[in-house]
Length: 314
Image (cartoon, rainbow, N blue to C red):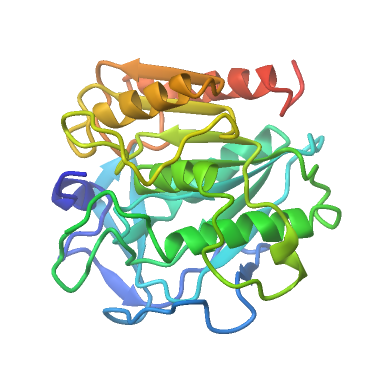
């Protein structure tokens, strides 16, 4: 992944953005659920307390963007479906270069869309900063490394969702993941590393599978070098779930080679995959519609999920 300086400014995480030291809270009626009963495994020191930042002057799709930094206590927030429940659920991984989380642009906005389609949305506030980003040098010395401890949080979230499927009226065989940018890399990680135990089991939930049933990687990063050499830490196999991949050709943050390399790896492993490349769109547009055709990708994703039987036909 190239420097996140430009993207961070767009995501309202510039140094001069208004900031308040606080813990991010979802809208009224939704509660954050701790991922871990105590201190998370392999807890790392943070640059400071959790901070929520919004820059009203940096707009995407006519709206500002909220960024969350220094997440040491990861949580998930469950958004129940509106109308008829399809039984499907999606765990959402916001992006942010493993420096921060674009919690609304690539988080709550996504849940608004999914719940309107009858899908339970689980918004994951995973630990950041996290590898491959190193806050001590403000760099990525090993850009293709696995994202510990963020990956631990993602695996734990999938297991918790399945362990509480009956309570939340979720079909445990219809649990997918969707992520943007760094979150798109998390999608690839949990789609391929589900047999790897990244932490010691702590309760009954950890007996559940962390393999997603379907996956959507939106402008993902960390999957390939500029020469399209695929990340060796992403062992794509026939067991990798069906995957939807989307990116813009003029994405100058991660680069279109990320989507191309991942799709090729999926294709070579005979994994059902759908790839969408648009000429324009850049990076970090989320679901907010603009004049660019790429921003209407949710309609494509809905059709794809219907083809898998994850949501019913119209």
